[in-house]
Amino acid sequence: MYNVMLVDDDYPVLELLIETINWNQLGLNLQSTHENGANALTHALNEMPDILITDIGMPKMNGLELTKRLKELNPNIQVCMLTCHNEFDYAHQALKLNVQDYLLKDTLNPKDLAEVLKKLKQNKESEDQKKIKEFKLESLVERNRESMKRDFIRHTIDQTLYETKSVIDEARSYGLDLTHQTFIPVLCFIQDYRSAKISYHSEDTLLFSIQNVISEVLKKDESTAVHFTFSQKESFLFFPYSATLKSDSYGVTTKCLEKIQRNVFSSLNISLSFIVDKPFDTYHSFKTSLHQLLDSSNQRFYMETCRIEKKRLETKTNESLFEWYDKASNEIRQLILNKDVSEVSPLICKWMNIFKEKKYSSEIVKDWILKLLLDLKVKMKALQFFGTNTSNEILHEEVIGIDSLIELRTWLIHYFEMLLSAVNSTTSKSRRKEVIEACKYVEGNLEKKITLDEVANILYLNPSYFSRLFKKEVGGTFVEYVTKAKMNRAKELLEQTVDSVGKICERLGYDNQSYFIKVFKNYVGVTPIEYRGEKR
Image (tube, rainbow, N blue to C red):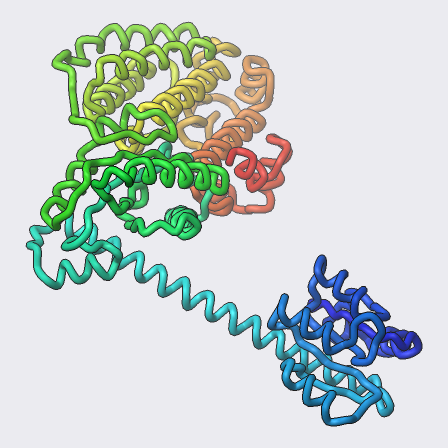
């Protein structure tokens, strides 16, 4: 609905137009009325109208001056002028101001003004549609250009491209003059990517948001630095470098990177870190620098949040991490037996500190962790405990996808806290084998419909007897236990995935999304969408 401002020093005319024109029926909102141009201008500075209906001859500020001032502030405002004069000079001045219509008050009919308002509204709608199309086109062009830049970087890294005129020309078209200028290369990467992408509808949206923020910072700084996306997690920045004593290229680069960090974190709540390499001035050194930055996985793994560091040589200890394996395995086994959630964080942090001190290879650390977790699943089965319902393949994918020690620590603490919570919810309340087996079945089949009769049949028990036994041992009904387990899993999926509520509903065996949302709200206190929003 568009806002209309009505300005006329003749109050009866104002009253007539206010009462006789059906503003709502026209799809318009009568924003304000004023008896002189000066008062109207003051109001418009706080709340700009979309359509202006104004008399020409008024005290303090006439309609022509008011229109001129508002057009300067909002060139797209639609204007219709009312006047008692029919002289050519008024009409001529109105035309020069690009006024859309001109009505004589002596012969004014509210129906005529209503028709004018319809036309002005149509003009605004056409302009808005045009703006939307232009914005979409600009976005498409920009995305295509970013895609071409990404392909250029990937081809440079992956293929044996020689320094040809076409390659140099393409680089120059993106702002990299590899024949006359020297650049400082910077690797930019998202820390805790797993958490970052949960807040966005898609990885492309996340990537596009970061690109926009970086572009805005470079534009405001009037920097000639160039930004290239490489992957969902990584991108490159190239800053111009000068070796003269008067210029501090690294200082300028660092200040700009700090601004990018602050802006990305404040607007997107995402942490970026940077690794800065030595300058390059040829295509060959450009390729070499890209490879060196991407090979800095160990440095990246041990970097703290929101850091800017110079590229270092990869140093790895000669000690074997697997010498600690038996000790760690026994400590984790004892953690499970103690079933004390408060012990999780200190134990995980202790091992993270050992990794950081020894600087073990990030690949070896992740292999070591994965082996511990897979072995733990086997041991828990032998102890008649159950673990998470995460398959070995998913477990492997999640651990291998972790890029930093900080992310690994957070993930492991969450993993063991959920594990102990699951163990405590059953073994602390029941020692009956049938109940433990029933709980194991529920945890392993959360993505199915689970009924009391089905589980009782699997345990070779009478359903009524099983229902009474379960309630006596656990303290709640079997249906309540299943609902609680499914809702806890729903919370995990909302926190750890970008799946829609409908998809999560299906994954947990619910046919009706409205019913799932109702059950979730009754259990958690908020809707799934609200819960995900809080966790962002």
